[in-house]
Length: 152
Image (tube, rainbow, N blue to C red; front, side, top):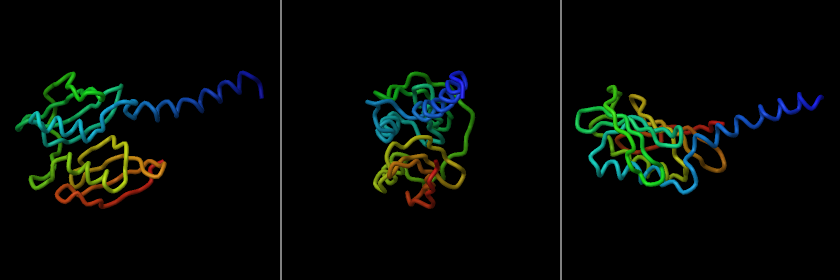
């Protein structure tokens, strides 16, 4: 194998790891549950989606009946940008606040929750446990974990 071929293969092997690290909050970031609690105290909710992208939390949420898209700093929870968004599916009226849903997942042994979205009937979260990444489905009214599967 030539040095050029080896360098090309090494570059391909490094790229996926950089993507894996880029979709997780940086060292020193506040846990997502604290960010959500802070936003709930500011009158935001219900939430429809949160994901970590380009170094910040991107949040789709309602305030009153109006949908918003927020960009939130992961270190201090400050709203960096707020725009009117498109209406997204909302959790049912009897749903627990998202902060309680996140706490129930943390209490089940998961860590580093990210990519949270409401999928019409349940919350879908990506989180880590036992050195693996999992997709977790959570019932919105009870916080019960309905399904969990390793998502490598």
